[in-house]
Structure formats: structure tokens, C-alpha cells
Amino acid sequence: MKKSYTKKRKGLFNWLLYSFLIDFVEKEMSFQIQFIENDKTVSVQQMYVVPQIGSKVEIIKIEFSEEITKLFLVEDIIYSSYGSANKVIGKFI
Image 1: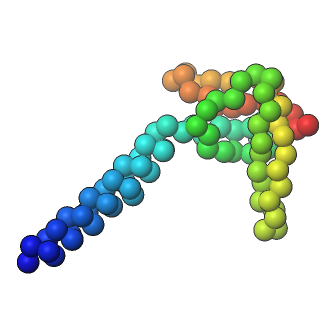
Image 2 (image 1 turned 30 degrees about the horizontal axis):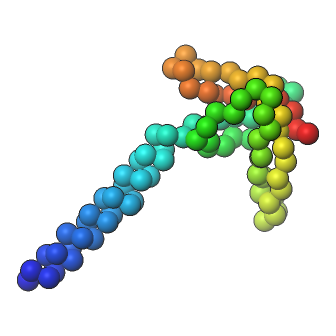
């Protein structure tokens, strides 16, 4: 009886720690940022760090089961009223 209780307790603890808490922290620490080129949304990605103006960001697109990586040059960043970054304006290089 004691072994099955310990096994259930460990299973619940592992689920709570790895599945719930880590997913929660990842969601709260990331931003959903729109990449805009010529007034059109090119991509929407989850990022942990807001890019700086003048930096280059890798944009990964999956088209026809093929990954395409392009560099996006950041020209301007638009923040929301809550202080988080919403949109990154720039162009592909």
C-alpha cells in the first residue's frame, strides 16, 4: 500500500512540476510579437527577449514541410499600453 501511494505522489509531483509549472512560466515569460513589413504582418512568433532596433532576427517559416530561415532587420518597435512589445516593424534582408 505504501509503495503505490508513493508512486502516485511522485507521479502527481512530476506532472505538477514539469507539465504545469514549467509551461506556465514559459507562457508568462514570453511575448507574442508580430513582424510587420510594408504594413503587412509577415509572421507572428513567441519570443523571450524583445529585439533591439537595428538588430537582426531569424524568422523561421514552414512552407510545404520545408523550413525557410530569413533575417529580419528591426527598424522600429511598437509597445502596447501595458508596456509589452506587440509589433516589430522592419524589412527582410
